[in-house]
Length: 482
Image (cartoon, rainbow, N blue to C red):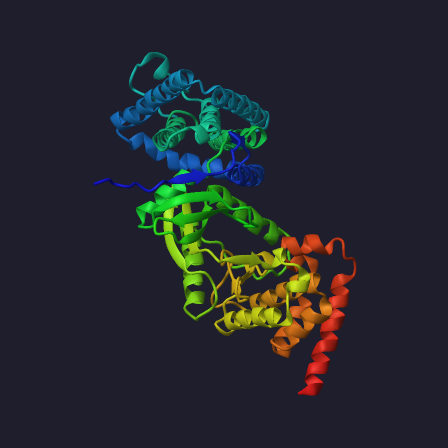
């Protein structure tokens, strides 16, 4: 008897070894914001806070000496092991880029620390002596604020190359170095300034120079799906418009064709940066608070997809949710045999298709589900001419009237650009109530529409004015008929 083994393949475009990550940009933005807050607080309340901290720290004299010795000496030994061991590991593995990146970050951190020292920074009067003589590792002032800045900068800059165990060791070293400085020097906030300087330096160097990609490979995606009972025999990168994820087409072992999307730290960080940008614009986008973790965000997308499918709505069936290293999540859906609306010739988009699209959106509105990304790329027409909605990555359940109106405005604008305002407005007016259309009319503004729609509008000056005028006329005519 001969046994047969399924042929498993995974193909993807050659990835750059080094790339700039949205996660590093987010860290830099947060670090700069904290540095700015620290400078303001130190200038306004520095003396008061240091005096208060000095009073609190006076109680440290009651701490048994052996506890202080263990904390201080243990941290110093950990520092030697981390930097010494890390240097040896990097040299053996020839991690020259990691070493140069970390060294540049340390140098920048020391410059920022020196700039901080130029200021008139208040200090208290409490100091704790270490009762163990370990030569240079037991002397007062080791580590100094210079050392804290260097540790944080090196750990931040080297993190993309380090394993989870090394990153945990670096975190323990940072905490220990800060505690040591607090125990072994006069009360001040220099340690905090040094730590923030190191964080800013490390993140800035990573943004400037880049780091190894932290996105999951195709093989990691396949391994993740196999682990939840959906083994694949083939996975290829999908050349489709997929915001906020890495898309693939896959074939399961039983021959089923799938659409697979992977979401990792980069996509999560890009989404958070986008939300921060929208908040700064002082526009009422109707955004809800972001989810606390990437897992919660992916689970929410899965929930909305399952709820929409259960209506029933024509949307692909969710087949699996899985994890993929490093720190990524994977969603697998049945693949639609067809094309997205933006890949059809406008002449092939019939009035019946437009009516079907609006009926699907109407089903979502009835359940107060806002899709929030009704671009033409997320509307599919299968081989039999049926219309499908995909991608609930930005969707909200129990949505507000504003979000539901946004959906109508987005679909109206994107479809009008494709089939013309007359046909698009006629389809909308025949499917949507006047109150919702009125709210949607107010959302027909470039800032309220998706990026793909805004890009198309750049070459169509005055298009939205024309669309609003035709919508007004269409609503009036519909009211008169009824």
